Length: 87
Image (cartoon, rainbow, N blue to C red; front, side, top):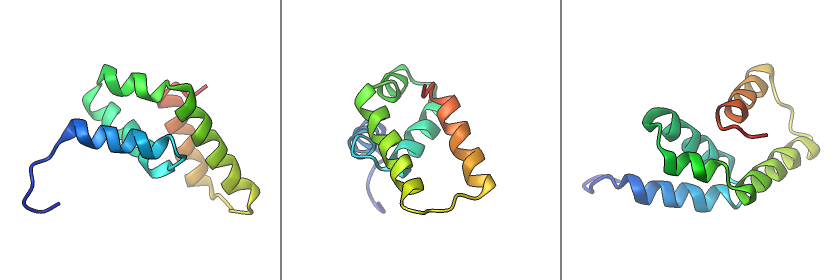
């Protein structure tokens, strides 16, 4: 927010918590931070099996609920998955 110092570690903790609950935006933020900082801690978070499961379920749920993904969205999420070693 305005007028406060940035706290990178705190941001990572909040993104991790949200991603473990299936928040795709938080997952995207973790991937972006990892790409920017090349941080071992973030890489380990992205490899967490609970986080991977939550994101997989969230993505599948959005597809099963009838959400229509356009080609650029599909390409973007494929890139996210590849960059995070999301197997």
